[in-house]
Length: 299
Image 1 (tube, rainbow, N blue to C red):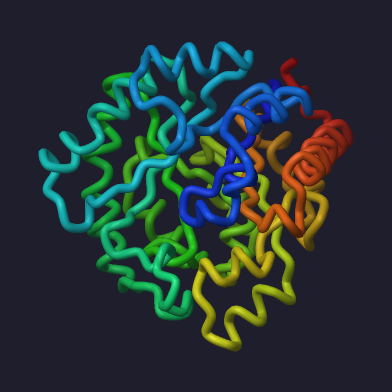
Image 2 (spheres, one colour; image 1 turned 90 degrees about the vertical axis):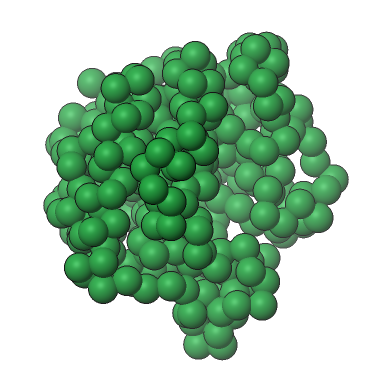
């Protein structure tokens, strides 16, 4: 078994806070990511929208498409409406051999609301999450039938944020609903990183190596700051620069024969955390922990 190492371009090109990264281009992101050693990149909003244009754009940097965010609305849409809303992205990702679509419920998220405390995120009861899980299973089955796995991203500010939320989602959903396991979002949400990974290892299809700075997270919670406030303050960082034990994560991935993508996703203020420097730090840390865990990395 072997893994691929990819990165989200969000360190260079932040889609939610474009002014934060205005001095950087997507072309620079791809060029520097490839120079560091990353072989894949998740889709960014400022990449070409058409399939052939995106293919040429990525090929020009010798880098693969290793997934990409999909803003879902299954909570409020019926199946047919949501299917039609995501169809174009599914077809594009199939054509470009993406390993998955990274799906998250965004119909009522507060993650992009600068004035809303992250503590005020929408919450569902267990029964409501189980019902939602059954609903998105139909969509995930449709995606799978077209050759595109759904990897559900538990995310700060959304209905699936805490460890309980993840557990209920996985319990209620069919096997077609895979998990995008994000250590940083899980810990920020108060969850146990290793307990959740070990419990749902057979459902993990995509992995985000995202670290956190605990002091910033604590300040965000205690002072009712927004998710965007937390990002600007430096709540997130690359693996090896925060508090998460990614060596333990790598050992767990090896034990479960994980052979997908490990993706760095760490949005920060580039004035405080230069993208190239920090992205290289993250890459080198992944190479180190994978080496110690016996996880082979594809070139």
